[in-house]
Image 1 (tube, rainbow, N blue to C red):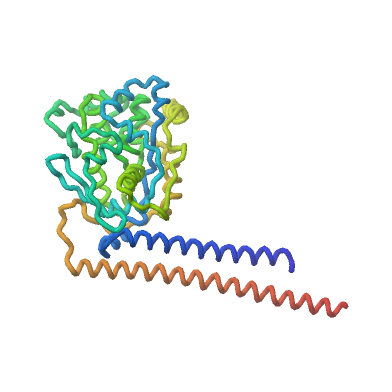
Image 2 (cartoon, rainbow, N blue to C red):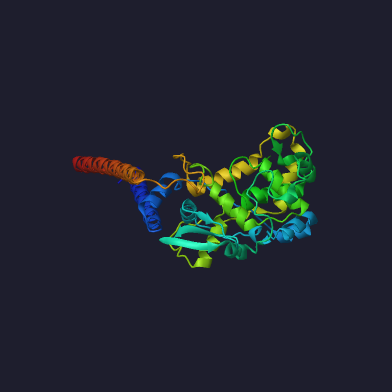
Length: 388
């Protein structure tokens, strides 16, 4: 048989094999997540609003580098706020399981701080804030900050001008605030804040108002109850169906603490590109030197890295239905539940139809190539008989 025929047949068989493998892996993921919930409504909510959500790729810092580079103010801030355990967290995480837990997250406040409830491994698990604090060596002392201009009476002396002066901002305050216009140690703090401590999507090269307020409080030495603040930030992920989510490494710590079975779940490995070290600082200073377009300049390197990470982890982002913005929303009616079940069945049927069509199309290609190969082989045999 001619070499080109062998290659063509092998390519088609390899493609068919890859398609079957991807289909089987996807079915295993769906089956794994189906066992994560104990009711249809929770599973349907995950499929419609959380399954394809991208993750904010976390950053972590090399503390030895921080000490050797004489960033004394940064070290003092992290130690005062007890954030060292969180910002140095570089463990791998399980995005499907994390989004599954966040989709059902509920916070209950109590006199001793409160606790969260979420689906894990087929049932609702309860985790006190004190347990989350111990996993990252966070302190429960400080202001239970919910965001906004006024978190506590001791913050009454805050003003935008004082905040900008405290973080050392050197640009025009009209329009967007660029991280390229603050000192290097403040830029490191902003990276840790927006990627790890309070992760968010969007352009991380822009300082949002909440970023500036929180950094002002940290630099002023005001203690924040970080476990409470982190949970409040997690609840924000429930507001929009296409909002990037974070805290992957932290949730992996929670699963380990609770003994949750993660075997077979999809895992994302945190590589060295996400570490803030000497290479990162060199890049920051180079961008600062090249800054010529004011506060509208985009941090292209950061966006590129994040887009690559999100594309690798979660595939293309899909927009879904807007969901509840707070935990106080009314309970769904029976009609809502039935509609959710019907939507889930329609979603699954459409996916299965697409899989069956792809398999049928691939089978037809294989048969056509086999028939073509057989005809040419027969013709070659006849030619040999003719000349013999």
